[in-house]
Every structure is written in structure tokens, then in C-alpha cells.
Image (cartoon, rainbow, N blue to C red; front, side):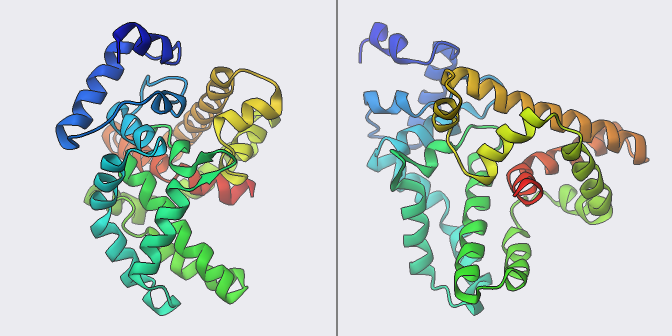
Length: 271
């Protein structure tokens, strides 16, 4: 594809140099990629502060690139096996779980597949582990019809979402403090911020769908979602800084854990 066309198709706030570097990083792991026009339609408004290579890989998958999809599924093989082992008593077979995950991620929903919702704020593998965990929970809820039965599989499925040993220790020690700080911060968000986060994480709307519902440009919608997330994280950070007797390094690790769980925490509190 000619470079002029390449730059013309990119969202205006994406630096072409950053996109090119991310694309080359993906190509180093996934030969045979095809950069079709459809890929650009699945990019977020900006790559600033994002896992750029992961975003490009997700956009390629959303556009239906078979090599990218095969690579992504191969990357998730061990996570899928672990989730299936934990969910075995819920009657979920690994092959069934693989097919359900493939459908959830790549089948069009309101014109866009679920993988297109990935924005790059966390690593793609972490985001996919959360999707996988929620898939298990939804299956259990459908089978049981009871919310209480779904809690145990959810906790089990999310146990290894973040496998950093340091974060696991911090999670055990500061779980209650984090929960209280997060709940307080969410309750103090302006109504506009709560609404946009509810659209994104409770209703599962894409940036495009949020933009359409509010009659604004998708770049504006993306900025509003990002601003609401950042405001929430800053408030949680401030509250934990005031209540926890930890070093800045430890607090930074706690905040990494919080960011990795942002989707689930917001969905639980605003659902």
C-alpha cells in the first residue's frame, strides 16, 4: 500500500511512525500479514500510551487476517487450557471453550467483532484473559441461573489474569484497601464520566457506538473514555497514597494491578 494512502487512512491522532514500528514488530512474529484497508477502520483514535503492537495485531484480527488470528489463538493456547481445567466442573469442555472464544472475539457484533474493542491500555494477553474469564462466568450463569454460583468460577478464572508474583502478593495484602478506594473513587466521579464508563464496560459499547449514541466524533468519544479512566485512576491513586504505608514502587505495582482489573471493577460497580 502506498505511503500516502497509508497516512490518509490512519486516524489523525496516530503518528505514522509509531504505527509503522508497531506493524513491523507484529510482522516479525507473524509472517504473511496483509495490510488491508479494513485494518485502519479497527484502530483506536490514538496509540499514545498504548501497547501499540498489540493494538495493531488486534486490528488485523478484527479485519479477518487469518495469519494474525492463528497467531493470537496460538498465543492463548496455554491460557485457554488453564481456564478450561478450572471450569471443568462447570461442564465446559476445552474444545467448546475454544469455539466460544473464537465466536466472541471474531464474529461481527453490531458490525464490529469484540476484538476491535481492545484499546491497548493493558497488554492484549491480559485483556484476552479477562474476556476468557468472563466467558466462563457467563456460561456458568446461563447454566445455573443464579448469580451466587457464578462468583466462585469468576474468582478462580481470574486468579491468574495477572501472573506477576509481586502483584499477587500486593493483591493479597491490599485487596480490601483497593476495593474501598475504587468504590469511593467511582462514587465521586462526575455523572458524565460514570455514564461514559457504563457505556464502555457495562453495556460493552464500542467507541464508534458511543460516538453515534452521543452524536460526536469517534476521536472525541475515545478521549472522553480515556479521560474518565484517567480521572478514576488518579483518584484511586490519591486515596491509596493517603491510606497505605507503602513505597512509591509498591504503590505503582498496586496501580498496575488496578489497571489490569479496570474493566471488571467498573462493570461490577456500575452494572
